[in-house]
Amino acid sequence: MSKKVLFVRFRKPLNIKDGGELVTQKNYSAFCDLFGVENIEEYYVYPNLKYEGIWSKIKNLPYIFANYYFGLTPRKVNQICEIAQQKDIVFIDRSIFGIIAKELKKNRFKGKIVTFFQNVEMNYYQARYPKYAPYRPLLLHCIDKNDAYAMQYSDFTICFNFRDDNQLQKRYGKKTDAIIPVTFEDKHPSETDVPIANPPTVLFFGAYFPANVDGILWFIDKVLPHINIQLQIVGKGMCKLESKIKKQKSKIKLYSDIENITPFIEQSDFVIFPIFKGSGMKVKTCEALMYGKHIFGTKEAFEGYNVDFDKVGALTNTKEEFIAAIKKYSSGNYLKYNAYSRNFFLENHSEEVIKKRFEKLLLT
Image (cartoon, rainbow, N blue to C red; front, side):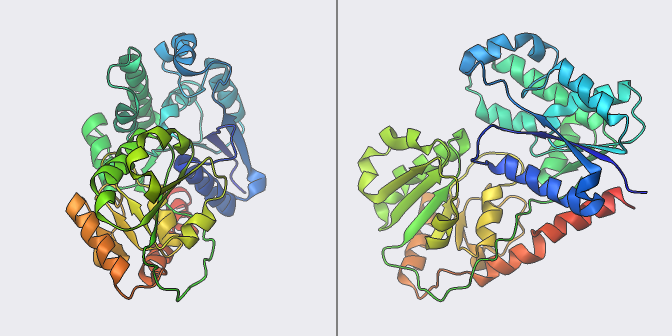
């Protein structure tokens, strides 16, 4: 008899998907392969768009005090609990919805509750929320409680990497049940023998988010004046950088809110990820590997990816390391296509990997 699954997922009302939404879709695809799409019911949690910014947080204070966040409400959780009574598995795609696991147990749900930690959310939101924002302590308390609920009440918990697993154990006293790394849909890029141009086109892609913004502005300030490249910055909301890049504007092209970034990745000579803080794994790194790109990134950008840095591109944590790596690839006899990156993706981060690990966790 096929198992019935309720798949709880967050959905932004936009066509532009960020890394978290790409991870969610990969998880959903793996469940469809394992259990059959006809046996899976999706429940979408949408944010409240009626109120935005600080007013949204004020309007939702009663929910936040009760540990409901990210568009979740008691009414929605009650609906989930009712639907779940006819299911064998409830998959909660983000630990920030941990209160669902708590309420399912309270309602004596007899199936399996599985929660996926896309981040150690406390670390993620500590970096995301303004340091002196008046709402920060309350929101962080709500997020902390949901992560705790997820760890306490889920039958199975999953995270991306050993770092997150260790941090969760330290904070909540338990390790997760499985580590399943980021995967990405294989778009089968073609190999090319085109050499890297001089000057090269260098790509940074990612949404307008504190860790991305801080990283790329650091690169523009510290590294860009010392190298001859054309830097492309592509991502949701990145038009907001316009006023902050005036000194190096001749070397930079900004592309904001692009639905399909594939042409930018394919045409780039290599990609850079100057990311210095964060949690989980960087989906953009997996995407770059899938396209067979040379990658110059920090330790944080490669967290969870056990790559050979000399073969994938370079580990570049400092100004000097970025400059040296970019000059080396700009003046050497390198091709745009990196076969090592592509093969590493196929062997470690393709959709088959995630499907096999879900199968081992849920069907054995």
